[in-house]
Image 1 (tube, rainbow, N blue to C red):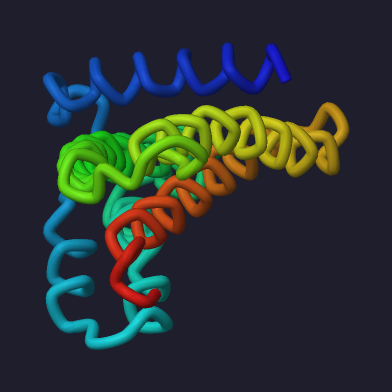
Image 2 (cartoon, rainbow, N blue to C red):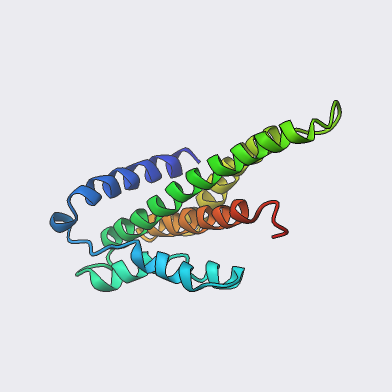
Length: 171
């Protein structure tokens, strides 16, 4: 699990550097593909179909986009999009949960929504990391393991965004 975190940090750093130097690294990436796809969606299956859209477009539009380096860079960029969105929706849901806790004032024995949300998110992170570590392990020492792990992180992060966006709304 530690090596997946190191891999993620390394690819995130590449992605951050790439965001400032997109012309130099040659990646042709835009969040617009994902945003457009999400905007056209009307139900969860359509939203989930948007996961990886910008990374795939980046791989197709970038010379060498299907190389290990290209895939890693493109996947890392879209992972950054979903991670930022996850942080935003988590903060929004936390504010809502804290207000609900105040409004409900249900008393002792009733779980706090804010505490439950925090505990759930803290438990989800190692679950995601372990899942993606397992995904990477299936590649042995092959170079496809890095992109596979990033794709897993991207997918699981996006699905957590959708879960949190729809939490308390009946799914």
